[in-house]
Length: 91
Picture 1 (cartoon, helix red, strand yellow):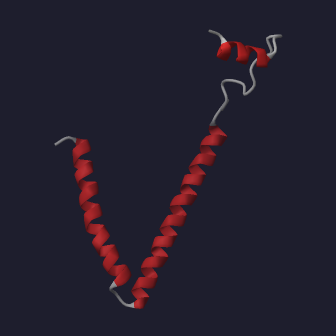
Picture 2 (picture 1 turned 120 degrees about the vertical axis):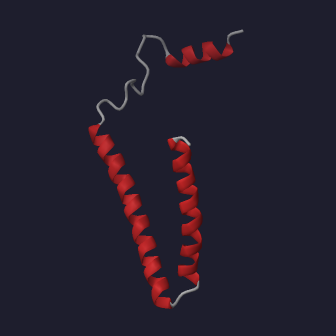
Picture 3 (picture 1 turned 180 degrees about the horizontal axis):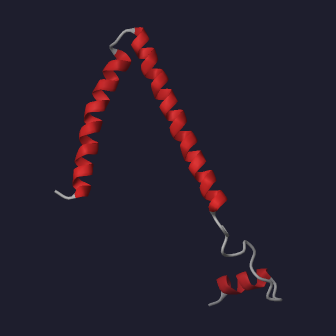
């Protein structure tokens, strides 16, 4: 079995085990346990979103030259509207 298939099997198996356990803990246990499960879930989601924002911010800080091409076309001395219309209306 290749490494990718093994990782896939582990992910599917883990998910199939965690989902019923999480459902049981969230709906069929006492109120205190349900409260702790919700606290852990909300905390995990907030940490995951914060980590994604942190990674995006770090990558934006480290990126050199985000735009390789300018946003506006170079001025060639011609009217840009004429160029656009000549390309779309030519037969």
